[in-house]
Length: 304
Image 1 (cartoon, helix red, strand yellow):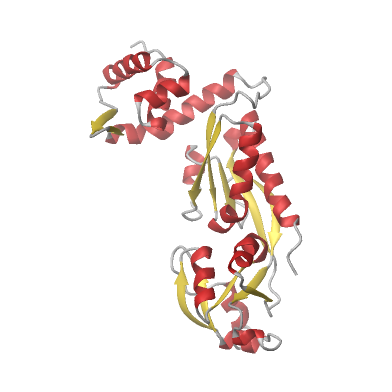
Image 2: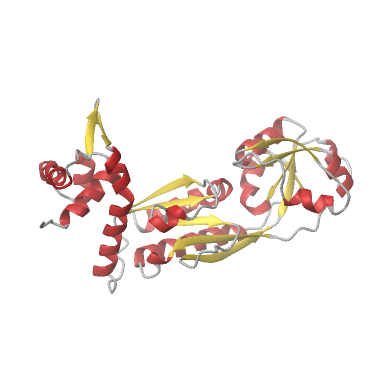
């Protein structure tokens, strides 16, 4: 069975764009030419790949299953054929998926997008929500760059320490905790809100308090830092979050920041990627740019 491997590139574009016109524009071919490629792909695979629903096209079940491996094959082929070439940022056209914690995205996402657009206007970024610590999407090539507080355990996942953060306490203006110096006893006695995508009501803070014979009153868990900070502004709930990555959000809301009265270690921040991108010049450029962007934010002085 003889296959035109150029169809992989066309298939990758069709699955990424979800339309014939979008895929044609991405590969700089005409829409009729891309439509013919789709016909050849359908004949080769025995599957419709994209089907029309109203005015849009949606992928079939098999197309969804093929998207990740097809994208990986195309990326590997590009790396193989361009390993010794320098990246021409002005003409680079590529989609990168960056999966960061919501606090890091809020703090540095805008600066990263601006920096990418300034240097490589043909590059597009997907800033996706961080679902947890599962590295499967990194290994499948569905995520290009991820953030994490811990070094990965898998040998094929690379990582780079880009900063460390300390925990800080955020409360509304006029909160009772602001009336006198914050002690660990007064901190524990307040009502608290944790931030957890999985709804956990406990964190390492509670372990540190337990060692001192104290227990804080956690009344709720919120899914994102943005939600938690807004609730802190509208109530007497206390939120404890990493300082640097939530600084801008706290200042925008006018929240009061207090030092955490517990000697906890600083929180590390790592950028993670799969080893397949070690020699990928475009990916190297992106992760270096992301590193500089994050480190610049961490180096910025906190407001008094």
